[in-house]
Length: 168
Image 1 (cartoon, rainbow, N blue to C red):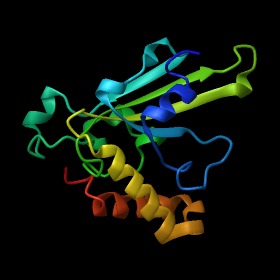
Image 2 (cartoon, rainbow, N blue to C red):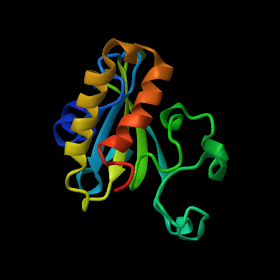
Image 3 (cartoon, one colour):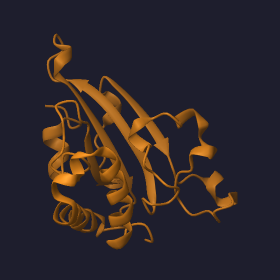
């Protein structure tokens, strides 16, 4: 089994998003927080996209070089669903989002898996614990209301700050 398969990535990362909030559908992606030193070889997957957030160009931007995403700076990603709820720097010191796809059965397109890796630098050793706390807080405070996508996005923006991820 390749190292980028879900079964290999889940134990080394922290699940977040709709699957962690008990509101996933059968079409939901797998959102997993991971540190850069734990990355699997996602380039071996069937297809992938990488969005960088912490490159040298950010040092001269109006946000003072704070790592983060601002849709006006990356218009080519404006319609990408995997970053739709990002509000500049709510993700804190996020380095990359890596989105990749693979078929567990190459002859059956219904077996496609899509994984979004939210990548942080290894210096943020407690990032997994912070996301586990985020998941607990989301489920405890919002419960079944998370089934509504807009509620889920608003709750995520509020909760990610309260567990200390936004201001890392």
